[in-house]
Length: 351
Image (cartoon, rainbow, N blue to C red):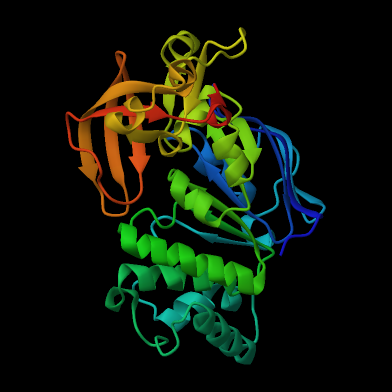
């Protein structure tokens, strides 16, 4: 449950390494209870940004404000442990010589919390991450997913107002990662902690985020809901990075498909799942409106058909243009089959 109150405010934030701006003029407001995913390719500034929020990187320009109080600027640098932030790192960062209970308790005991309170809180968060009964085990006795839950429990133990997750599921296999994302979604729903999740995986980001922020070369490209970013990308980089898209020149669009768009555009895109394949025989049999058929459909050939279980992925050659088409769920066309490609004009994305 989110509110309208910004818990975290980034104002024209810039972080540099020598002459290189790793993050440049980034401004985002994050409301209480919100999950924001920060995505971008390697070197885009994702980890630098989250480390600046945590206080692990100094800020050159701009400001980080948490709960109404500046915590990072060129004149203010509040210590990380004084920011009311929990953070989970990519490598888990668990102490191998400490038990699960000792790992989770560490931030509380370091703050001088009374022993009875520590015991109660550790039991609460271990129950929250479904690790009851694992108190006396060591990290080396746990699976990767269990170790990750311990790291999450430790970050949540002090009951922080903000939880930061830095590529923390990237080392897990796909099945376990999906389970951990579902668990994280459940935990976040139960306790409502404001969360910033950094990942290079767009699907992971869309799975749990209320909003996504897309970075490129340290600059913010777009912020919006996963649906808005996917369906209405603000530029070609976002369109290509968030999901897969077929790029079409406006000339090809007009000549092959009969669609004309604004003269100020040189390229448009369409998502693979928005393309539909039809058997040639089924459409060629209808001779009543050849002109209108040509406006939305054109003949092509299946170059490659790959069955992937829940979907079939086709590579289709249409008038010297290669298109990727995804259909659910079963394979209907073999390689070499003639087909027609159909799509709705409303599905076109400006790039």
